Length: 500
Image (cartoon, rainbow, N blue to C red; front, side, top):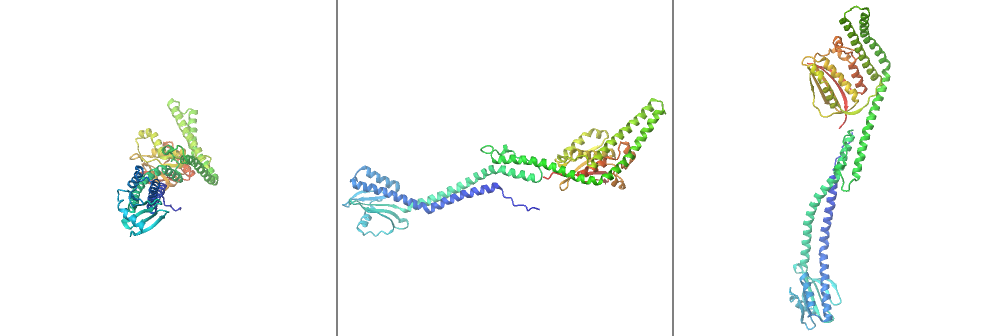
């Protein structure tokens, strides 16, 4: 037996893969922020300081410190980028000082120029021809500075706190974390819903294929329920192919079962042909002897004019017609039985609903049941699909039900029951009345055997019906039988069910 593999939903796999990729992208952004955002901010500040330096040098070359344009440029830089600036001329006169602490830088600038400032320089970042960019201080007092002395004698110093850069970087990282978490949650929900939309038809195709494994070909893929965003897509095409495959497999299996059944019957029939022929001829001769003798006797009586009255002649004719009808009926049933036993009648194995077949037949017999005042109890049951010859299955049930009608007595009740048994269904027809003698039970399936000959002849039986049941069931390689109950007799037969 094949090992059952652990099922992992493709929908879950699809969602987990995309959620993992999204989380990985968010995590990568966070790592890059932590590693490089502060450096990026620092580089931006250096570029800003350079722009301010260019403005100061241009003003020195043109001697335009007093112009509104120069002052406006430096004020914009100080206000926008949080830079403190102090500019002095060759006479140590302040030419520009920012309002955000520029006066405090004047002494520091002179200290750098004349070499007596005690400010700790942490790191020199850039050394130009007439300027230097460096980091000074430590902790929350750490600054990015640029100072220098131009060839025109103009000295300057610019400073911006690094603490704000690190704070901004930290805020950006935290904000990225919050936004990433929210996006991860929303993205996860969206991806899960989208994956459900995409994988739902795949799940249906998987279920259909599983039904096909159990030879149930009723399930069909409905592409209208899973129409893709772009119309007819590859999944719809796969669904159509599976639908065609399902129909083809059902037809092929039906043909194979029919062919296999015929092969088995052919092998068995060849071995029994001679014995059946001898037995058949012997039984036919015996059964036809009585009706032929009756027909001959009454016909001779009419010929010789034993009774001249019209009523007697009508009675004689009625007996002849009745016996001829019984003999014709027996010949017809014998021909059917002969075809079954010799394998000349093809068993057409097909898939059909057994419950519907039984329900329809019982309904058609309602008039006879009412005339005989017999109560019928047919068990309610969901559809049961079987592999069998539908016409011959009806013949089996008809023989059982007719037998129950003719022998029903006592409470005058007939019960029809169906029960699943490991891939088979057992159909049972029970009627109240006298039991069959134990010594007769093994022989009732023989041709022309009658338990009560007088009663059998009374309803026109000829002992062939149960033989036909036996031949049909054996031709389909199924079982049959009879059981005596406390208040009656139950006949049963089995059929192979369609696995679900």
